[in-house]
Length: 117
Image (cartoon, rainbow, N blue to C red; front, side, top):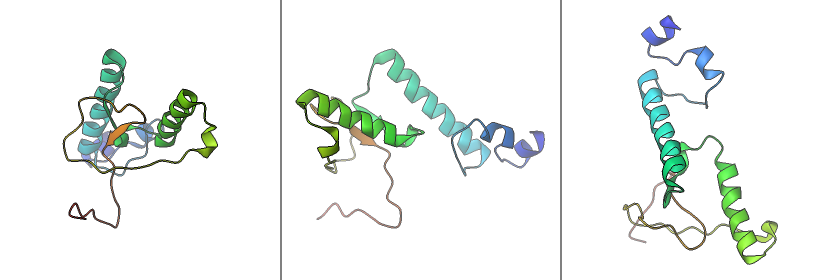
């Protein structure tokens, strides 16, 4: 553990119980603390108006839950549902949507977004 910390790497014993990460130790700790704060705020204050999707370990479960809530609300079979995406301004919404979920922290890999289109 000490050698890993001195090399600014995540100790292997920690990674056995952690979410996957390639970050150096300092960035990993900052990310871990941000995840804990996100979840603690959710627990204490209820669901946020906008979810930090990068903070979830298993994002598929969250997205399936969003679909399940919609399917139950409108009594539609979940396997008939598809996601629809709207890119919004850089401001984080202060109120949740009527249906679905607002998310932030989604990354594009090997692409870019042109707001002018």
